[in-house]
Image (cartoon, rainbow, N blue to C red):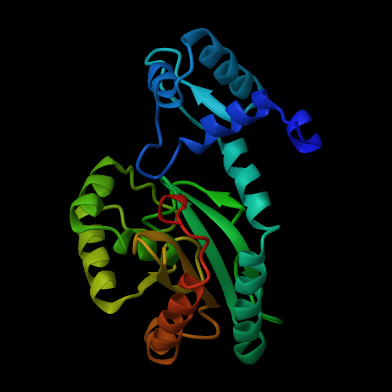
Length: 262
């Protein structure tokens, strides 16, 4: 037995394998599904799941017994992402565009209905707003959220919007689901989405979706953010519509590949 094998932790391996079962296609699992997939007995499976729940990386619904990754797990994955070469390449692209144009830029991944920010650059001497590291209830009122939604199949968009609660952030936030669907239809046609003071008064943003380079699935979005004191919405469309699409295409090529396509 090699020295590496001697110090190999089977328990850690099983715990990581459980976390790896959760994907975009299977965001929720039961204990029996996990046990069956990994070929483990129910007692061991319960012990590993309970440990991950106690550590805060998984959440278990006490009524349905359904298990899903937690926000802490999301933050953990974001921190890992920030240590990879993928982020280094993404930063280089964003930094160059920021340097050449002095604009605020956000890059996010979408996990279920949460936007996870992986990089942000702030324009100098300009009033804009920075999203938190992870944001919920913002798919309908941000350029990032609407851009991501527009990348999904039409049927999925309809299903997601139907389940959403359109909370108003400002007087201009879209709270009518039919209006939101029309906005997303337009974004899909234009290949970018706009948010005109819908998330924060005075903030106008343009965003384009990011796609997995192999599967072609929408995985997030990139946005340019402006103060209304700098640019009006029409001016932003004219000056930055093509640039945001080109930026999104470039960043999509740098996205970490879906593990099912490696």
